[in-house]
Image (cartoon, rainbow, N blue to C red; front, side, top):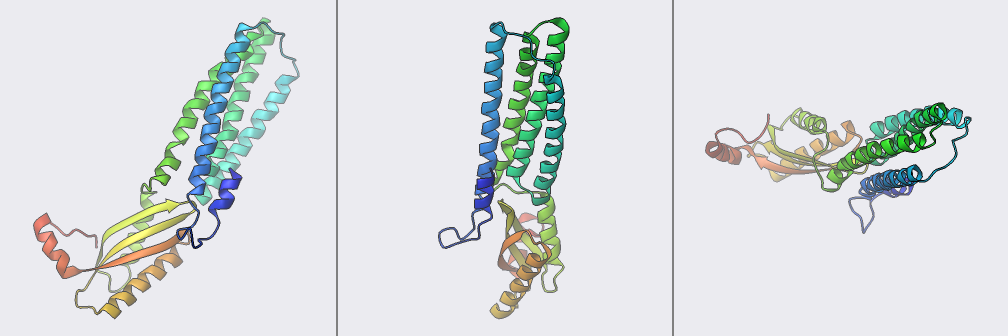
Length: 250
């Protein structure tokens, strides 16, 4: 996962003008598939051990598992917080990796208690078998976000709202006809269609677009690029007459 993050933070170059951000969701997908494989492996191994007689687990393993559960929960919470702060699906997936370890260890802890209490060694294996589908389900659920990012799905709607608010607050901008936002790694790419007075010259329209771009980049540090297209208001009024209302937001 960390190799993917190192690639994702590399700056744009000649061959990758939009940067290397897509490496981040790819890393998240790799982590999720690793969890899927681990869940299947846990299930298969548990079934094998249930069918094969074996000795009772050692009592001291109860203390070890308690320590593992506590440490893994703390790690999961910390890594999840980091993932939320930098909006990284790969880091969030790694947080779930730690939580899945805590879940497995928690079930194993219960299984060992039952095994020692009832003198039934397979209780431990039944417990880990029950943990496997929980890990599998959540690993598959975690796959949705990085796949959506790879397909350029719209990110958090609040980001689009903030972009529209920032753009329309600038003098000279009448409204925003379209606003598209996509996420690549830790950065956002924005495409805006600004509605302006049609009497503006090319130079004036360009200057206004440049002001909007620089304002958005300054106010939203996670934004990497803003592509702006200028639409004359008079032309859009003609369109609005055929669509029963203005096709832009003020």
